[in-house]
Image (cartoon, rainbow, N blue to C red):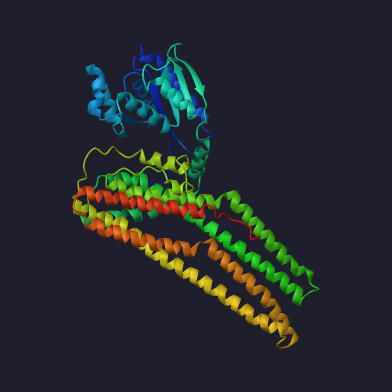
Length: 529
């Protein structure tokens, strides 16, 4: 298997609204094709990122199906459907047999079907459906005659809602032979597409991806064999999610290392600069050339700071780690034949990310490739328990147990080293003040009294920079939560209870990652000023 094809496509979600009664749908095919070209023109240059279209449609007669039909002609395009109420009620609006057959044909092709909760009356249900389309699309196509709506939730209302929310809009005027007007609104999310292009352009050896992917695949297969877990999703996961997860994980590790090393060198060079100039002044006052060490150290700090920020080591680390963890959970949600939780942080974690961030659309693009899940899992409840606990929950429990111990140990080492240096500073300062020993030793004591605190400060800065204590405590808390959830999962009596716990585990991991991201996103690389 070749693992070089781990590129994540840009997924452009095109919403549709419009009239049901249109004379001839073929009249608008050319306009829709031209609109797709104009949408592509709105994107930034994407040399390494393919573009795929998803049409979001309620599949009412007329415009909803006309636009969906044309977009689905595009290679690798998808259909997502939103229904105002249950399908058996919805189809009562379609009077002819051919219309019913067309509806079910489209519905069978849909990768995702969302049925909105019942509201107050049919008109309100249609209005809510139209607003859902606008809220969840990147650009809206409206086949509209420009007149006011005949009732609540009509095309004019949805177009006005799109304009109010500044959703990019292509208006195909059905009253003037399909004349197309583009209203840019807030524009398409170009920045997200640029970030995804940067991600796809990252260089990493394919052999590393292949080796780690194969190792992970063998681990899953072995656990599946030992627990008698059978899933037709393993093949799809091995081809689609695993290589992308591994690549993202490796990139996150790469930029984490760059960011941590840069921080360590910044603080270390600052301490060396202090030691160098102190040594020159106290021991060799006439050898001014030694002072160049301080100059080079400060220049090194500036260079590291500049390169780190230019290369975006910190931002790439937290973005790639966030996406990797989303892929990790998605592996097991897919194996459990469950949909993923929508990526919208709670209000108290709104600083973590937004639904407009590139990681959200990147994950959505991969998840949209998931085969339609229209059958129940082949494995029984006890088998699913055993597999998910061993392959997923136990893996995360072990990770957080090791991480908590390692971070606490590193925190303690740096804390004790810093405290020891401050204690030695007090001692050498005492010797220096009272001129204990010969003159040379007194000078040495003065040198140490200056360099020991500078070194201790550097160790303290590294300790804070890497958030060892906070990460140790957070992993300890996650360990406790996951062990509790594991016990509950193992004693679940029915599928409903079990799947609720699976969902709770997923959300617990998501919120932990969101909380981590809030903490570290403001720890950008800074000079020690």
